Length: 253
Image 1 (spheres, one colour):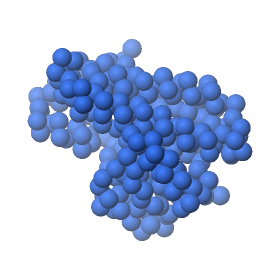
Image 2 (cartoon, one colour; image 1 turned 30 degrees about the vertical axis):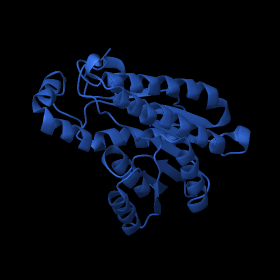
Image 3 (cartoon, one colour; image 1 turned 90 degrees about the vertical axis):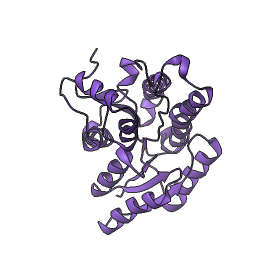
Image 4 (cartoon, rainbow, N blue to C red; image 1 turned 90 degrees about the horizontal axis):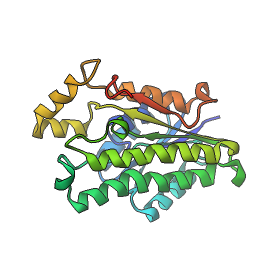
């Protein structure tokens, strides 16, 4: 039986790699994107060229109405939802708390927390055996910053990811009896478009980060998608409420 997966923010970075590799494992994939249709279509085409099934669906997850439309479109185009990866996220504030603009704080929480919450709500409505669903798996992309905090930068991002952790563990307890596993992966600083943009503005900040990492380098998207795919799989059938660190040892407790 083909299993259906929705990946938010799947047009690039970690989400893109999760979508491509999940398709290789037999998932039909809904590739969600906010604005870059060309990149989302590239992901879909790569999956189709490899013999898989995928659809690109535009939606801004920070808008509850668009999230509802997103999930209804998945229902129509793929059918029963079996898995969700909440990957969509933003992190705009490169500065201290006193430098953080209200609009940046609001946008960070709208996407990273509210958007993830809305997506979890819609997924549970479809997956929960309480509602006649078949069960399923949700994997949230958190961050090592949820533990280490934002030191002179990204304090709003760190706070939003700490919220993701608590949503993950709470939802795991709430839905475990109804066939849904909920886990999170907490990446360290990873080579993505967002980090590349920061590197162009403040390359010294990236070098400072690398110096704090026991493994002495940034992570790759493949090193994050690996634990995501494991948590989605039946190999992790007894794993729920887990916060899996993939941070190169940085800021270990």
